[in-house]
Length: 80
Ligand SMILES: Nc1nc2c(ncn2[C@@H]2O[C@H](COP(=O)(O)OP(=O)(O)O)[C@@H](O)[C@H]2O)c(=O)[nH]1
Ligand SMILES: [Mg+2]
Image 1 (cartoon, protein in one colour):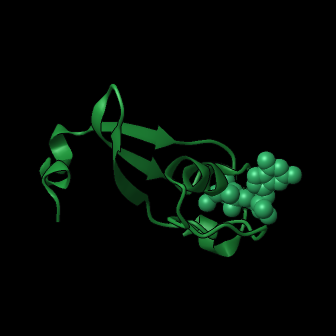
Image 2 (cartoon, helix red, strand yellow):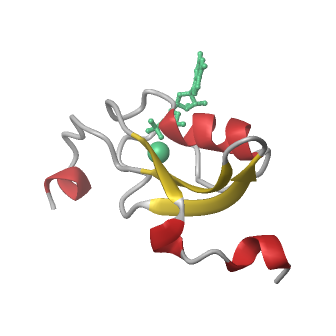
């Protein structure tokens, strides 16, 4: 782990991606990080638990992106 990644999670600016199910939240996270951080699927409810990705933002410093399940998931898994 390099020095930049040593900032503990509570001290990082949290940037949370929220919105309706299937609206492209996970796609946005992957675009922002340039990595396949979160699974993208046309199936609602693919993201269940929050997916966290620590990053260093130029001009901002240590942040953590959080991808969420979102709202309006009417599937059986969403109900859980
Ligand atoms: N047309 C279009 N489809 C998108 C876009 N972003 C994501 N998708 C598609 O929308 C579906 C849901 O994307 P996903 O990122 O998993 O949404 P999430 O449920 O909000 O995380 C997938 O089939 C993606 O390929 C976009 O900007 N345009
Ligand atoms: Mg998702």
